[in-house]
Image 1 (cartoon, helix red, strand yellow):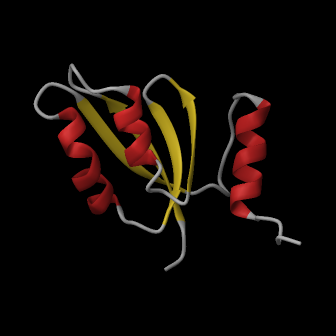
Image 2: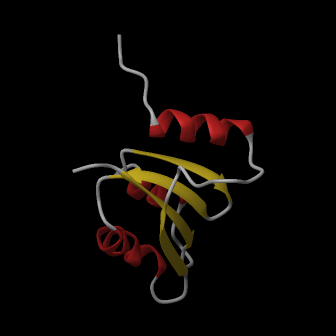
Length: 96
């Protein structure tokens, strides 16, 4: 399956640790957290699978939004590290 990119906004319910969130994000091929509660993930799983994974972290009082991202159509003003990560994620260099 080909990897796609998702934008995930996740505001967890009370009591959820950063480690619990990171363990779920680590199920992606790769990810980048660019702001509080905001991640871009490279994944081979679909939006429904990510909702199933993340739903226990937010129900009943948190917030979850998952959107498909077209990384080729992009503009913005973020840290240089994000743009480097995205460029390398779109066109990874072959390992020597």
